[in-house]
Length: 493
Image (tube, rainbow, N blue to C red; front, top):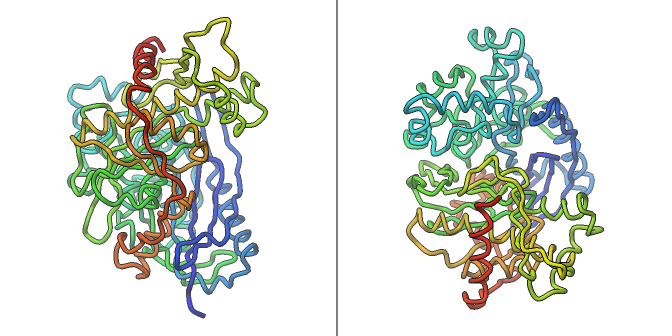
């Protein structure tokens, strides 16, 4: 049978999605399967790796049943994943030694504080990895698992254990334990990978007490890593051919493949990435420098900033304040007033991320009057999301030394036309929403398409990207007062 489909596996924080994608990169089937979140203590977040694996198998079974395609028609598999979430497993059996520590988990914050207190260490980590020292990243999570799982440290020293982000664990399982790999986009989120030398750093491994023997091989993001073996519902021999962390995959899926192109994914939080070319650009404004992907011998890099609370602010209005029955209602409610009536909402409900990096910050609503209504608060919430993203983009433009002319957007909140127009007005650049909103999975499929030879390069996939709607900016003077109010409010949060 002619292989005419790609299977994209999008392994996210709350669920796993399997998509069947055709040769024209159209989504012909999609199934999501959720799995439980585990909260052992305040600030701790875990996942059961076996539950993740079962959710992948369930999603694959579901999408094959939904589409009715013969699995033999799958030309290759692309994987994109929640980044930084860390798993340690036994090489002999593939059995995890403990639950995975999720990217959101803060249990290693004190370890990170101790590292930052050592002279020169923070500078070393930033220069080698492009990252600040933070519990967000994988290195201290791996060390914690070794130190707090009985017998794990000794087993690691004997070479009996493997460690990886979720992509590595899935490839191991899909290949029946034959392959232990990751790609540079995921490796660059560990605090163990030197993004300039393009290799695991022995110095950083020693610093974080993570034996190099634990680590996966780092191979290009578009590459045949291995083939399926013993996977329920799939024949043996399907190539696994594309890997990328979720935000880098979305950058690829938006075809932001030239320096200066940028995308923003609006989900629970918002992630803004700007392609910076074939050399890492150090940030002077609190952003992360990360690998975008590697295709062939060419590495490409990005600047990244995260807004911790975006769609979650709308959820808070719905669930916490109960002024909305459903999240989509916010657009009509916010549009019922011409502006926020002077209300400013800084959505720092879990602190402020880039470029402010203030974990102690808390949400702030100011400018309330007797005339304030729930519509004004709804409008201020959308403004706060857009203003948070505008701060990120301002920092990126300063780091890169160029103005952005277009921002490509995706994620659930990108369907909100008022939010997108506000974003365009604040940024003073065009905001473009694509036809295909499954950009993370699309990026994994594009990389797999390159890996199996469907495309000679990422540029060959350009025809798959098309715009749904463009939002052109209004006059800058219309948002000047709003930005001034925001700048005055943020330091008070």
